[in-house]
Length: 251
Image (cartoon, rainbow, N blue to C red; front, side):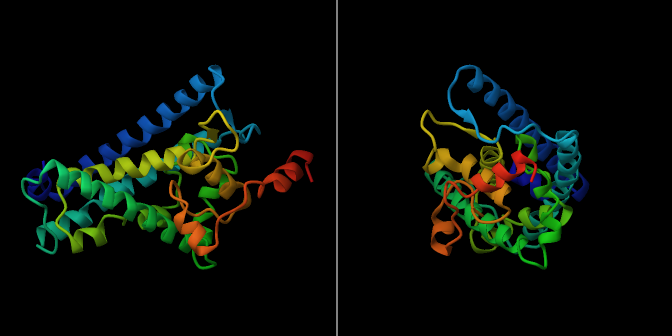
């Protein structure tokens, strides 16, 4: 598979990448929606923000996501070019243990990269681009790729630096978008996947990102809280209560 990626012409790489990201997006968005409905019926967990969605929100998110998918697919030409130019290489015949270790390393890197890019998108220079994503005051599983093209390009750059410093297996690199969108889907599910409330640790990812959307700042990470805690950007669990109460009252 790795040999095919390196030897294929640019148009095939971009086309295959676009289809791959489209499959990931719709599988996670639809699967997340169905999972939330099933858990709600089973009375396991709870919806976090119960306000009705504005008319057309999901349709807008899907339209924006389709643009992001195209950017991610075409963006695969950058790692493809690194490999073609010899600036990066794929490991040959990696062991299962090496693949697992590489996936774990890419998971940590993805969390750090997302935190850094997310903080950058909240600066005064770039926040106008990130405002597109924050139009979804109440996130949905379809919000995962609902980005401005600038944000999509920044977030899609995640594999480039690791490829320059280590010869990854193709399987590990292929798993990176899966890790990313599953974490993204968890964060945007607007559902607490826990019997107790508020959920903490990994199960609290959806609540933490809900607070980010509600407060428009803080909680810049996804699954891991270590970067928010280290940088002083973690939000308290009641950070959105006052804002949501004001919105509910129409003030």
